[in-house]
Image (cartoon, rainbow, N blue to C red; front, side):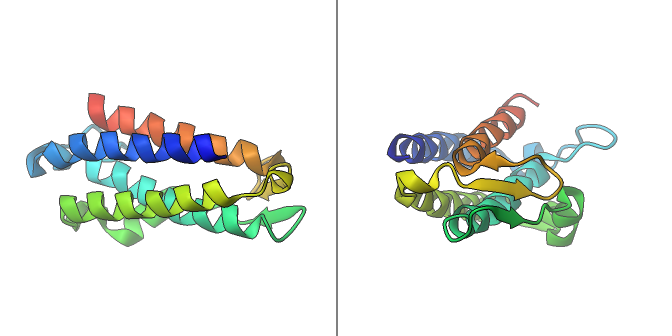
Length: 147
């Protein structure tokens, strides 16, 4: 998992430079009906980091691990990301992902096949959830960059 943690750290460092350059106008621009603004997309990634950190830690103590899903829309709404300062969100996102990377790096090889059921998803090994977390993060960073 050392390589996955390193890839996550590298992605965070690359993205942080791009994110910090975005203006308040850019991150608050309406993207259309039913779509999150860039602040909310980054907020969703903050929520994802917080939830997945818990999963990655807890899955090391239970096999199988069963954890809750989360209502993404509700979490973004409760945190009121639209109203938060952009650079505060960038800093929080960076810090949480560095924390997640440290956990990923420390997962023992024998724990990677721990069966994890998250919400109503089908069971998948912890390693799959970790790799999916990085894919998910990259997807939304690309969304922020292009829209």
